[in-house]
Each structure stands twice: as C-alpha cells, then as structure tokens.
Image 1: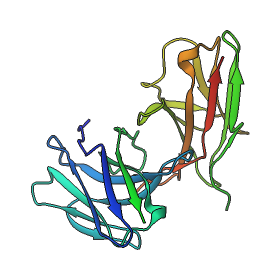
Image 2: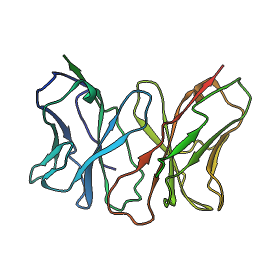
Image 3: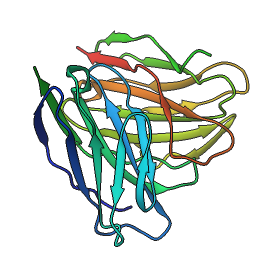
Image 4: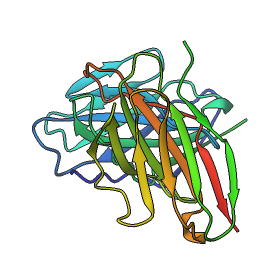
Length: 111
Length: 115
C-alpha cells in the first residue's frame, strides 16, 4: 500500500483558498487518489477522487501532476464549517478497497 | 434514504465484559467495513464483509474480536473480555454492490469506553 504524507495542521481564515498537498511517492499505476473529510465526532465523508490532471466537483478541486507522486486538494473560499481533518488516501479504484487512513491534516478556519 | 446507522452511539463497559456494536448499511449496500479510531489517530481498517462472508479480516486483532454480517439484520462487531486499550471510536462504512469510486459511506461511529 502506498504511504501518504501530508501536513499535520494548517490554519486559514474565512474566504481564503486552502491548498493541502499530499505526497505519495510510491503510488502504483492502478491506484487512485481519494480525499476524505472528518468532522469531530463524525465518520469520514468522501470529498473527491482522481487519477491524473484535475478533477473538480461542487466541494473541491484535486490537482495531480503528471508523475502522480503528489496531489493537492484545493478548497475555494473556506468557511468556519470547513474546519475538519482532511485525509489523503491512495487505493485501487475497485470500489471495494480497504481504505488506509493516515493522521490527516487538521484544518482550522478562523473568522 | 437513511445513511449508515450504528448503535449504540456510546457504550461503556467494564474490563472483562463483552461489547457488541451494530451497523446497518445504507439501503442497497452489500459491503460493510469496520474501522477503529484511537484518540488523535487516523482510522485503522479492521474487517471487510459481504453478506454471510468475511472478505478481509487482516486488520482484526487475532483474539477477542469477531465480526459478522448475517443474511438478515445488521453487521455485528463483537469484542469479548474488553480491556482499556479497546477504548476507541468504531466506525462502520458501507459501499454498493458495484464499485467505481473509493467512496465508502461512514456511520456516526460507536464510542466505546472501557472502565
């Protein structure tokens, strides 16, 4: 399983764009990059998934360079409610993967 | 469409007792996963089940822990003779029969406290 490395914590202010970068140097050819969000006392929630280049949905964008050894989750104009832990995962896109969560990045958004 | 349901939300047990955690997957989902989260840690995979089958239990401790997903009813994670180190949040997730995304739908978790 590819190991991921991401910052332990990040601080931001309301209205700013936040970029969280994740390193996955040993990513395999068939692996996809997936991001989850977890609020305190709740289960994680899927945010976005991609294989290469750029993926965008109503919540976030995911940028993946050509070598796929890293990825960047971009949250546009964060609000206080975006304060959460964000996990970067690498797994096969079988839909049945057993997900491996690291410690994630604790994002704190302040007024 | 109700999400993944877990009960109880909070469970207190004394050392040596048994803990039973229940998980009802989302309607139409046939794959269930159990994860454990220790304080200040990420989630750790424990077991992956389909109806009446254990697919992957590589994350389950060898002793005292067992899981099932019967043909009828919820999935059960059972911890026998609990110890203080079992205190954690236990999350259940489910996914639909046909894959495509690594999107698992998580329940709210059961917080187990062992006194």
